[in-house]
Length: 133
Image (cartoon, rainbow, N blue to C red; front, side, top):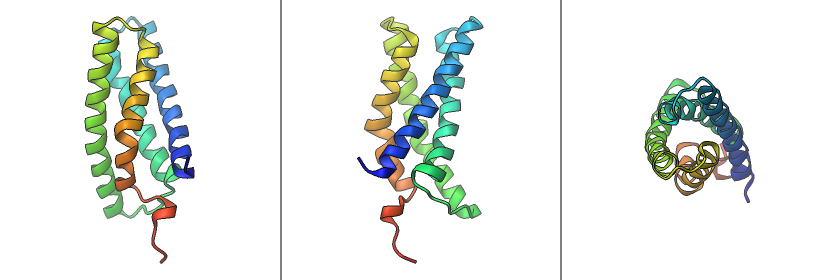
């Protein structure tokens, strides 16, 4: 496993833990899983962008144009990932009745490894893929 993938997976675990904490908190406040899903995913997305850009891919190019391009591209990838997470979570947890937190973990992992991470390599440039300056 590459260093970038390892770091990104660690960021993914942190984002998932924050997501789960938000789901648990909102559940304790009697918010339905269907309604708690969106704010929980949003917390995870913010952690994913910052953690992957700065730590996993070590992409420290923070000029305004680079941030705007990367932020826009990341949001497109994550909009699709968000929809996939929401849809698969709804099917697994709401329709099938799978346990909420376990359902979140399974769905998040499937979307992360199968969709998000492969596309983030196009959004951020990993150190091993940078051309010498």
